[in-house]
Length: 532
Image 1 (tube, one colour):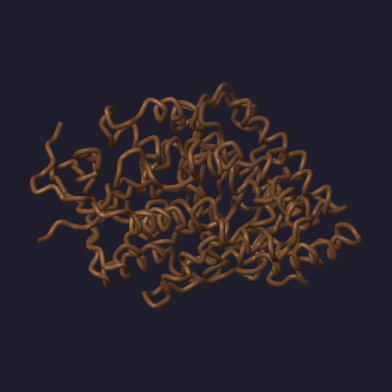
Image 2: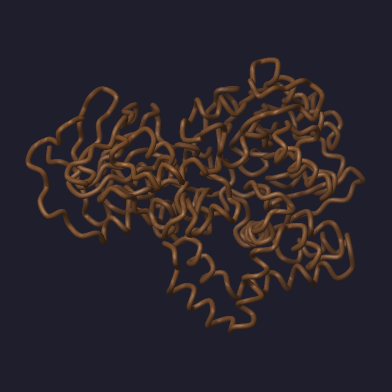
């Protein structure tokens, strides 16, 4: 068999998107995945209960639904079907009030108007701005940096003053954004809660812009899920690649990128096989793993090694899956129809939670993001039941436990049980009788997530902080914000590259397009590259 034009390391969504785009261009592509199945953080199983489908990592995909990269792949032709809950997000308070990101602008506006007169109109104005900038803004987000064409279109559409106002708004912390836009707590909670789908606390720059973006995506596209489980999205990407002649090898871990005359020429797998790449190697792995494990030290410049010491992972993630015998008995109206529910009793509680993480303390009252998967996709569990999960964040390194259970960050069975109980106490507070519905439970602490997917280092699901100091030209390291590396023909295609985490395929697409436009090698090596 002829050598492939490209080898893609990793069959996560970014790796599979990159492989598809290269195959579309007529390249022969081989994808090597260490795990026994593809998908990375887009996988589902029936491991908790055979009658219940649970997504192991990511679950809701507003970024995928909005992404021009994903949309152009036309994955519906390969079996992908989206499903949505009636409402995208609900944020109930213990006093019975509830902010709901509903199925239409009027629904959300009515929900926020109940918190403060005028907040419904404020929401409608935000949606009007979104409608004006949506196409160009999404192009800015999902194309290589700097997004010159889309940026110029956006600036021309808005004019100088409004463009500056939008840029300022996008940089605001979530708390300040909410205070400027809303008089009541409902709108402020929707912005801040959605910002915390990344690691942007209420006082973090960019939090307001990211929270607004997630809210607008939810208002426009909902928080959709693949029918049948997250694996259906992966299955569509794999099927599309196969239809174009791409080859996927699962259970074949790449242990080294081999460099010949300054160019990535091949990869070596754990079984000793050497797979040559005629034109490019694309790495859907975190940048620290690429530079510190897959490349020999002599191919990593000192400036890269120095910058890697400053690389910051995002918060670690702790997740609980439940098989429930009935829907969650929410006290407030609103959560029953939402796919995603945020549990925090006010903005100050969100600030306290993020401050505890910043101090490397396990939070006492963890902000909880809860998914009701059967509400979003009726086939996830038997009729009248619910397939549910919840996650929260904890520090990457633990110095103490603000909750008094003596959790040290070892995450042994005692610590996992103690923190899972803390999360369930939170759900019980908003939904008395919740525990009575639990038929089965699975607890995944940060080490468990990394074991299931080594790319989630320390349970870091976004492969690096979303904070401003590690975005744009600073992602993953200070440079150009592009997928190139110091090794010719080697491209970073993972979420550590611009524009970062989330299932939207942009890092993989950016790497593929860069490889396609790179100059051809002067001469492909005729012999296998020498191994160190």
